Length: 422
Image (cartoon, rainbow, N blue to C red; front, top):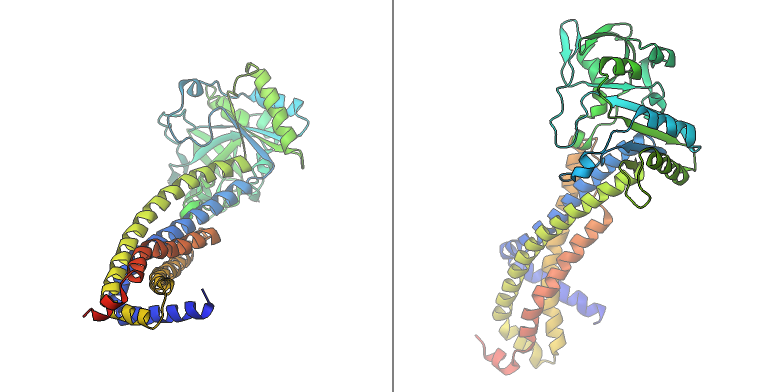
């Protein structure tokens, strides 16, 4: 088909649509909604994913995370997984001594870390004079956590190895704890009460990146105390979380070495799966992408329903157009128009109709993404090109699929009968 014919048919289609503005608007509403759903949800998921990527990589792209349970739990765990024995401080020492690719090894205990399916214990109260904070997370860790977890000190200092070995009652506070207990004074050197124990504040760390949709980052609620001080307070807690910083360029080797050490220490049979979890920034992002993929497929199904509704409307309006312009079709055929010319005329009109709905959905979706980003700066929403392509090409496809039957019906009209039609 020549370009001039396409241009002519598009011009005729636009003139027809302008002549029936309200009818055209109602017809393209379904297509418009379908495209809007696709690009809006894609923008939300894309922004959400980028936030997760930034937070995950913020801890370090060379970190390997170890825990006895899966890091991302989407359902009830099998009994053999729930009953895994905890990782121990000796496991961390074995990794430090036997994994040549490990640069730093950090082990930590969290007061409120529950078993899967259990209700977490009540967070300990943190108090300073007449102020308190009930959502603090008490963590027992080592001084190396400042490096491994990338939490640079903003004020004061981190506790030392000597303070850890001597079980000193010192602590490092995260941003939200400082804001709650010391809104207008310097926290360094002050004494706070946590879980019934007095601690001297020696440092405060920088505020962490906000969570998705501007949600509070739980890392900002941390109160970190020396590992052996924590162990003295809660000797029965033993569910260790281990983080290993791998030397530059040795990630694959490091993971393999860690896996061999832990499998040997935990007596895992040769052909059995690990009874512990190994996670990296890449594996977390990959797992999150799998979840996003499932959500997007559901969104595609919902959008398809809107497309079908819009397509039925397009077919209906095109059948009405064929009836209204029967005499016009007869005249065109009488002066030499071929069946293919008639098909292209009505098909172009249908595709133009749905294409306008697609463009409208893209523009409103872009405005929505811009508005959300303006309101929640921490969630940078941007419509990915593939979502725009799926939305727009989907709208054109609706025009082709649902406009084909009316176009063929118009092309098959008998020119003499059409000329006599009133």
